Image 1 (cartoon, rainbow, N blue to C red):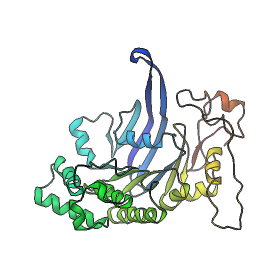
Image 2 (tube, helix red, strand yellow):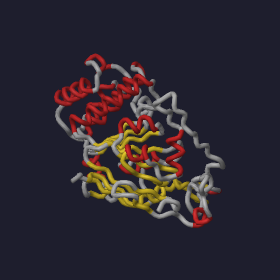
Image 3 (cartoon, one colour):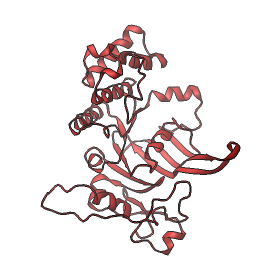
Image 4 (cartoon, rainbow, N blue to C red):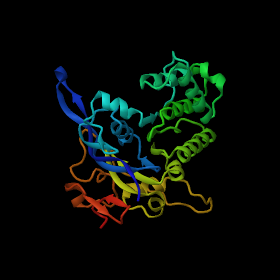
Amino acid sequence: MREEILRAEHVKMYFPIRGALGKAVGHVKAVDDVSLSLYKGETYGLVGETGCGKSTLGRVLIRLLKATGGTVLYKGEDLFTANEKELRRLRRELQMVFQDPYTSLNPRMRVGEVLTEVLKIQGIGDKDSRMADALAVFEKVGLLPEHFYRFPHEFSGGQRQRIGLARALILNPGLIICDEPVSALDVSVQSQIINLLLDMQEERGLTYLFISHDMSVIRYIADRVGVMYLGHLVEEAPVDELFADPAHPYTKVLLSAVPSDNPHVKKERVILEGDLPSPADPPAGCVFCTRCPYAKEICREKKPGRTDINETHRVYCHLTK
């Protein structure tokens, strides 16, 4: 039986729209009623187009952003109600690798200091042991001891991403949220970072929430996939099942854009029509109804409930029964 380490229920993240005198005149619904679970040792891929709320959800799940509503339990502990002391303890277990490693590193600190500072904040070890731990993690991610005293600007993009991963790994976390960690890298460097993530997962039993807009990367690294659109989770399934038999029209659109493995087989590309709705004023019914080629009247009037295709495949669509 799989061990559930994180459960998110009905999570919402609304950002206020300020009008005159700073008064809220509306809200941008970046994440709207999302529920999911993560299991020990798996990679959960979260995919969707730019602006769908996937990065915001990742930050909310580890309380880098304070949620508007919902519940997140990590190993049974409520992250949203944890006080400062409890949250600092939980930070050892919950780490994040950011999309842009350069902006997530202090340009005035040598990268060795970046790692030892993490241990110092958590009260782990003395100066010598912290340095030894940092050098050990450096070696794990493929960096050299002489890199320890360099500044972030002295590294390539791939090396900086390795530093970001080293910072996440040094506390031996249980869950790492990877927010588009390879999207800004060359293809050859992407494969190195992805393989490094997989090696670390096998060695340490890590759980990943891997956020990406690239379905090819998701197919390679993920065990299960959640598809987001306009702040909503619209489909969730094991990766092989999702690619073989997608149920939601939006998932079919995303998969139609993935290049075929066989150059002699021409895929039918699904082109969306209509405008992307504003997250400040989403449709009253299904959020995808304004662009869905199969939308019916019920889709415009009523939000779809959850339909379980089987034990591991669920979809939110009126047309799937």
